[in-house]
Length: 253
Length: 253
Image (cartoon, rainbow over all chains, first blue to last red; front, side):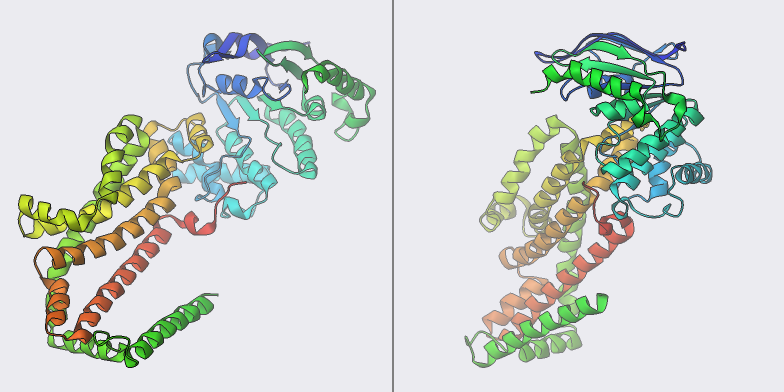
């Protein structure tokens, strides 16, 4: 059973001059679930995510979030950046509270909220550290706490774990599963890792390049309840990984 | 560590003044006094008030010129950095100003503005402003795109992006420009007094040279360098207080 859509994109096209980045792309993102946009580099997955975020304008087509057409960034969406995009001159707590500050939340209130989310992502004790004092993984936790603290219904994640090391990345993926279950938010997750996509997703949209289109939608169903430790051994998990690789192989030079 | 760096500072001063003293004793030239003679002259001038009267005169164009250059320079630099049109309009002016052989242009300034304070302030500004404008504008233009995007994604207004992201991100380079500009302003102030009308410190230099009182001449030159160094240190402290994170390294990876 697929829940109703929190986000839908309708016939999105995006051209950069003569280059057609996205063509006529329509996709539904079910509420409360995690949808991955998976594809080889250059397939426009980040472009699509930024269009959903309202950071880029599509050349044609429209995005709807909870029934409202997107015209720009809004309070219903929060973004986690690939390169973290932290402010190096601001402490962890100021970075996390940035979104609340921009929404005009009073200082004491936003710091209380920020502290709660800093604890939630496991950075308690680092409130007054500066980004350069943290490891890559910890910096992305700050980015995640910043996105969570504004309490948007839709969380947009642009290859959030690609800049952290493998072990940290696995821990992140496990934590993300918990987050999807507890936070009741809709997650849209861009990745180029097949294993990662299959591990964390309720729905995987496979994008093919030049111009980008959705070639396939896969909904893994069998192994989600078996616990984080067992997923990577599950036959369905392994089959889906193989199946995706088979369809992507020809697009990789 | 601060003790060590203080020790190194003192050591380098001792070496420099030692070399000066030795060079003066050889002597390398009749017109080159020893360090101790110069210091003697300095204390004599400080004691009889000559030095203070001179600085009361010299500081006028210097302070006015540096203040104008800093405020106007940063404002124009921000403007030039934020808008392509103003970049196109103003950048060439400041590049020409920076490259212009100022000493050759002073007679023109005197023709236009006379021999009073205006001309001297202008000389200070022509020396100080271009580097402040050019540094500020390039720093503003080089603000990481992802930080600005982060600002927009978290609903920052255009003004908030400028105040909370662009200016702090540009501040290290703006301050580097200020330091260079202020040093150039000191040169400009003395140049003006040597080339336009001998007043203040420029007068001490010109007059002592004409009566072959070289210790006084070098004492005056030494005092202006000392003042410049002190002022640059104050500027550095200001930066540390205003933008704490600047001393704490940068998150780039």
